Amino acid sequence: TLAIFKNGKEIDRISGALSTPDFTNWVNQYL
Image 1: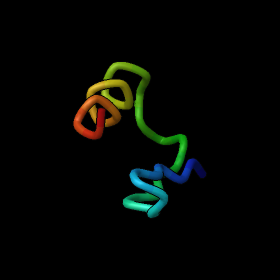
Image 2: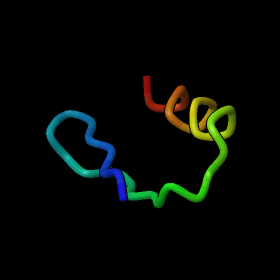
Image 3: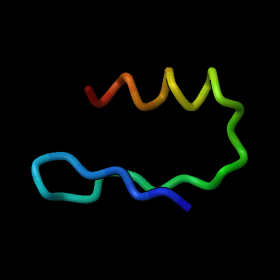
Image 4: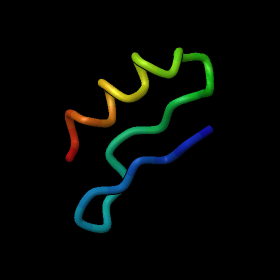
């Protein structure tokens, strides 16, 4: 699993089940 943090807070936690393009698009929402 990968925890995503923003401003020191964990905002989501995902598994490695997403494909790379979907993962990139998902992460880009938080950049």
